[in-house]
Length: 501
Image (cartoon, rainbow, N blue to C red; front, top):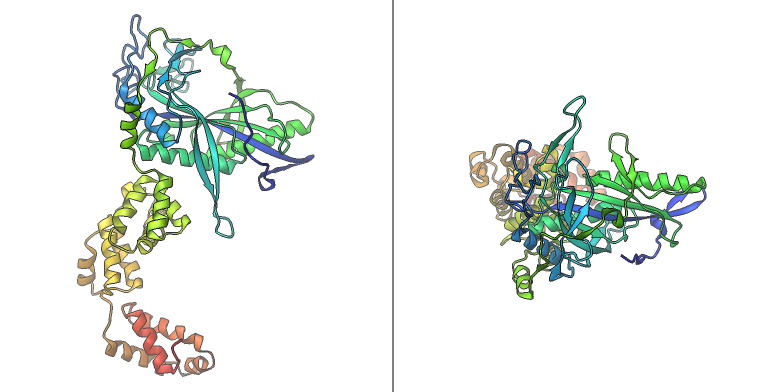
């Protein structure tokens, strides 16, 4: 791969050192486990959490004479992902043997793709912000390639005092290795890239993106240089399994390299591990180059070939992706870029919102979903899939406000009741006497009582009419928030002799 620098140095991303500014350069190799019922070259299950060595076929265990057979669904999932990355789909690709030896790799080699991957160059657009002016910065990150390969097993070193155990459940599971170009210039950009990539594969249904289960993990390549200078020597931080850890690992590694270079040292090309407990990286091994793996075409597998019709059929059934959905929310529903970005961050959130917004004011629906629903879920540690408030229930609350059956304040109380107890919002309002008071006679009586009890405040309002809001608040308080706010405001102004603007 020929490395091309596509970024103009940006001072706001520079890292200050003792001898001047430095620039960090980041590229990522993300391993995304393909969502499929069986493995890449065998019929063994891919179900997570099964007992050790229970999802293992004779192929996965590399028994003599066992031959791999390609899983068509895994191929389709790779092509779908490539289309989602706006990438070149290669109609001919080759599986290679990548030779290395480790106890959890039964064959003594990994079936991967090297010079002829299934997916070529593509791109992801990340969005940083908002800044203090509420603006977002869109940055295009290049995708070098996506190739299919089989996962290795898992070595467990903490099960016995003197022996290591091997679990082959993961052996042979299909992975998509998605390789970015070295286009990122900060830890924030890297975190935004990983977040966006995970969102895309989840929308497409090609990977579940569960980093805590290991189904999506990143090898992060970090180097530093003087701004705009030649690329430095990179170090690869292996198997980082959290977006937060990606950011921490880059920050630490960049400063480690800067300190070495400023002391007159040189950076060794090596593979490192990130220790989240210490917040630092440590050396694992000298970094291999491609020739160390002795790649050659796998003699048991023919080249993978398909035609335009195969690609077009997959393209025709792609779901609407986050960027397109965000653009539609802004264009058709009048949402702000920020609100639309929050709503499309996860497909489940976007689907929930669209159900609530159907036939209703999009901005009002967005406000309730973002501020009230997502806020409550965040407080209680629940995901959108675990929400106790259904789209129908939230929509019913919004409808009750529009019909002036309840006030905005009562709606907040009603939401909390539905959140904690469940139930039909309209029935709760009826049963608990939460209906908004629209009887002007009753509201007028409450206004008169507040005015009569506060002559000093009346005098202040005469001098400063903007203080009339105090009376509105007192009336709403005295009526338990049930009075129609517009009626209260009009009556207060009329009683105090304040002219309408």
